[in-house]
Image (cartoon, rainbow, N blue to C red):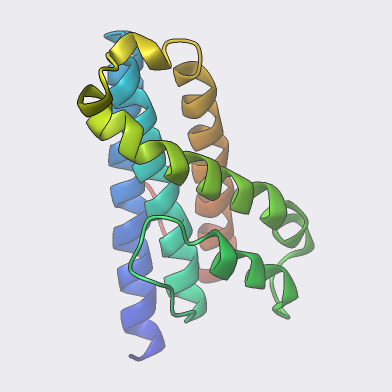
Length: 148
């Protein structure tokens, strides 16, 4: 895979992340708490994978890519501001990935959307910060226009 392809793919992934983030906001406004958590997780996952793709780092085809994401802090030419928050971002990935299944299929365990009422705003804020950091990184380092 050449770097142009990686950058194009990363741009698509970060834009997809932005759409998931908009879905999370709509769910928050509609008080669909489980959907907030699910959509927030997907926004975080897509933003994280966008960064990994841009850097040419292979990742497992699963929701929790936190272990691979942690490697970013050891890469040269990654801005210090981003390297310094990689542990926090990796924690976001892991935390939300762990809750994704419950948010999507909690009804199988007798849970309803209200189960996530207290957590949903935190999940959304986590996703916003995560997205913004990844989008800033991709814009600064690779010139990706995240607004397209």
